[in-house]
Image (tube, rainbow, N blue to C red; front, side, top):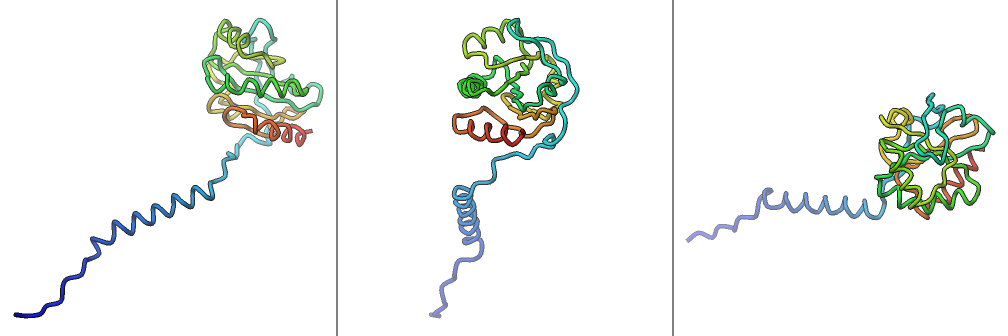
Length: 183
């Protein structure tokens, strides 16, 4: 009888375990140090594109680029749709901003007047003007890829901030700060 040493497991046994431990480490690091959630828009610092939208509601006038240069005061441009659930969710925050004196204009995307009217009756109307963008041309021209999105536009018609997604209660102070910075 020979006394041969037992064989040790090879690389094939330890490689899957090593890959799993590495993956687990990446997940843990991602949970403790999440990536920056602010998207840097290529349109920040650029003027609004030229547009002249018809009214999306019988209750409010339409919306044109020139109106953003009137009064010299920063305001919000909110891109929304009546069929958008997050747009309904952010409506209390838009109402709170409007109650604090923030001027808010809206662009209704691919919507019908009667649907916009129903949405505004149900969730409130914080908008001074609402333009109808049936083909999403203005939406795409300002760098918006979905609804809702909100832009801070200074008194000269320059985009100063882009908020992607619905405005949540914890975002209201950020929006107010961005408006103040745009003065």
